[in-house]
Length: 313
Image (cartoon, rainbow, N blue to C red):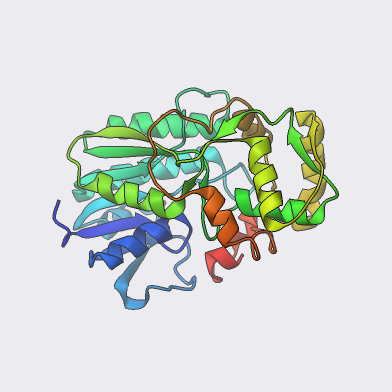
């Protein structure tokens, strides 16, 4: 696939999409984004062509995808909310796929989740599974990239664990914290997606990093590295969830959901796949130990504040 062709990234002013756009622009590949935040701070200036993510206007969506060689889709929602739901995200993404096919997009690189087909009782995974099946039936070349946990500037999980350790008298793990995860740096994720765009074969890839941690080990590493010594106590998942709801009120956000707790404890954020990147989480935490967790990363405000830089919210 020629590098001079026009590539499109959903959410290039957000998190994963921003890293994809940044790397494409560095390779002198023309980039368009479809975004719900057209007025958000744009660090790419005139190197990024901005169009609305017009899910409710099929003709406009098709027009915005005309001339696109590769579509990188990072659009999704983390939880059900009065302003956005999994069902809505599934419907919107199906509309995006249909528009891409009609517009003549040559390939779709789509972000899913590890083990998307193994947890249909959880709405997040069920929606991701449904979209994987939809994409496979579209009769377009595709790569489905399945990350578990992403980290890097602007991440939520690692930052907010550090934020919690800095502020609460103890940290409660869901159960014994022995379930594993393999975090991947967002820039390695973006590089994987861009490399996948040049492959003709359709495939599904697990996107995991070079280090494996139990959840308890991850919390211990973050605490030790940022210099915060707090007891790490195993607590019943239901109790931990109730505590999180109290914190929700303080930060005006959803800290974690029941579904996220269940997925984490089932080991759904772990994989035995080969490394998809070389950036170590331990190194990242050390390099950012002074700033990590100083500010709470707010998911809902990122969805509702469409002006400020994503990683500043």
